Length: 389
Image (tube, rainbow, N blue to C red; front, side, top):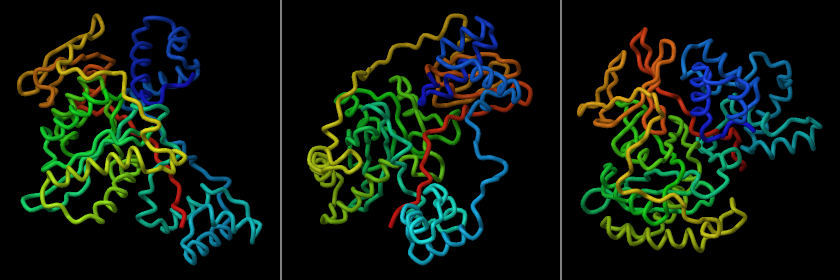
């Protein structure tokens, strides 16, 4: 059995930590994690080579040399057809085979289009529909803001929460701001009605990301972690990693443009309530074989906890509490205001210290250089496909 996709980085870290502690032989440890011994040795050797837990992230598999690089004449023909027609990879591939007897794969054609600078902005932002797909409801929710839209007094910020598997719109709200208090109140409503998801995907923006705290933590992010939710962030400058909510916002924007502009947040909220019902219950969706999202969605079995219980760290773990200013000392000084008064686990590995808050690894401290590093966790894989025209 391979690494679990959504927690691969966490599993690698845990595997390496336990392997270094030599609590059991490596073969037994590999069986426990459901991986082969070569895979186990690979990640253990990777850590020993780079001496950093952050180095356990997946590396690029692009070859250093390209012995099968496309023949220049074939590439020139792809470029010519693209410029003449603005077609996407599938159409160009078909014409090459039919009219020129040139056999290229669609991904190859798409790569030629991209490296020749012929990928337009709307093509770059195409949602990743094929390689990024959760298998069941509530495995992942995507959330984001749209707008803002001007109203009589201030602005309206549409706030969307979408289930990745079913495309069910678990929440759609008109908010007067993007402040954490506003968002937290609406999230609580959704959690109380539909339960809590396994993970949530969002961008590097307010109010769920901070540029000054470890792992980008904000007070809202900490409250989500306390509900047992895994946090995933989209790639900076790559909105396609939030493809479904981005595509939904395109649909929402067109629908809002067809309405007489509302003058208040309350008026927009009334309209969004009707729109959400239609989107979930009436509007067929091509990506789910013309069914409606409500056909596939069911509430989560994980319940919302208004007062989450204290977290129990493993026996023997070094546990320290951050001060009211979000500071803790262990070999080094760690600062994270969002974790003020919270307990974290600190684990020494050679000249590194792994900092864990509840179920999430958040920082890696280098005791030699004095630097702290984020534990890099890729959000999702995005498709490189070129949009058809």
